[in-house]
Length: 446
Image (cartoon, rainbow, N blue to C red; front, side):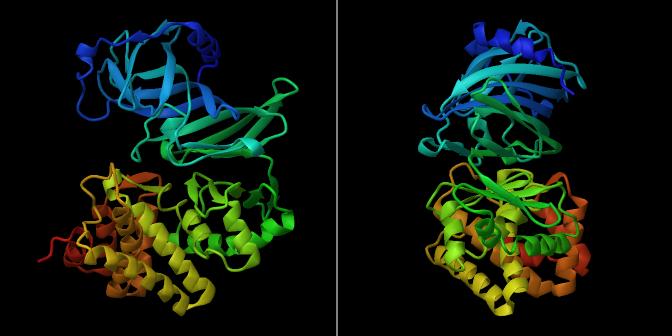
C-alpha cells in the first residue's frame, strides 16, 4: 500500500512552485524504460461546467536501472508540482511528455513514490455532458492522468473521484466506498487490484439506473433507461460471457463486469478494465430492433484480447482489435448460426478488399501507428478479423480454438507480439505457418 503521508505532500504540491529542468539536459535518456509503475493512487475532481479536471496522484514505481530521470505521458495537462517526500522535484513538460528529474539518482530495484498535482482540460480522453452532469473516459488516459500510457506497462489503481452528491460513479475494478466530503460533494473510491495497462483505466459518472444479472457477475447501467429496458438492451450479455470464457479457456478475470450506456446519440464502444462504455443511441436501437449486433460482444471480448492479453506495442494493435472484431463475429455464429457469422466475415473482407484495391494494403504489424488513417484502422479491425477467419479455415476447427486457448492462457496478464500468436498456432496445429503469416499478416510473400 502507498504511504498515506502522501496526502500532506499533495497539499504542499498545490501551493509550491515548480522547478523546471534545464533544457540542456532534456535529451539525456537511458535505453529502454528505466522503471516499472506499480500503482497509481489518484484523486480526481471534474468540473462539469468548465470541462476541466484537477488531480493529485501518487505514483509508486520500481526502478529497473540507475537513473536520475523518468518520463510520463501527459497530454494537455498542466503540472503544478512534483514531489518525492516533502522535496520538490525538477520537471519539464514538452510534446505530451512530463519529464521528472530526481534530486537523488535511483538505484536498481529501488521503490520510489512520486506525488504530482495537476489540472487541465482534456481534449477527448474525458468527455463531458454538462447539461446532464455526465462525464466518461475515452481511451486517452494521459489526458486526465499523468501515466505510462503504453500497452506493455501494467499497474494497479486506486481511483477516487469527487462528484456532486447526486451523481454515481462506475469505474475500473471494484467499488470500495462512497463518502460525503460535504453535503454537496461525495468522494467515490474504486480499486483495480489486477495490474492492467493504464490505457484501460477509466470511469463513467452520471445519474445511472443499474441492475445486476442473476449471478451478480454482470451489471447493466444507463442514464434514462429503466431496469427492464437495460435487461432488454443487454439480453445477450450472459450468453456472451459464457461463450467468450469457453473460447478463451480463461474465466473472466474480475468479480463483476459492467456495461453502461452514456448520453450520446451515436454508436461507439470503449473497452475499460471490467467495464465497457456504450451509447444511449446504441441502447435505443437495441430496444426497437436488432441494432448493432456485434458492438457489445466486441467490447466484452477485449477483456481477454486487449486487456488480459495486450499487444506489446501499438505496432501489434491488430492483436487487440482484429481479435475482438473476429470474436464478435464468432459470437454471432453461436447466437444465430453460420450464415450470420459469414455475413460478418464477408463484410470484413469487403472492407479490406476496398482498401487493398486502393493500393493501401499494409502489414498488420504496422511500422508506425502514431497517426493511423481510416484505411489503417480498417486493416487492423476488419482485415485482422478476416485473417483470423482465414487461419481458422487453414488449420481447422480443433487446432484453431485449441491454439487460441493456449495463447490466451499462456500470456494472461502479459503483453505479446504477433510472433507469440504464430508460435501458439503452430504448436496447436503441428504446422509451419510461416507462409500463411508472410502472405496474410506481413505481406512479405512474393
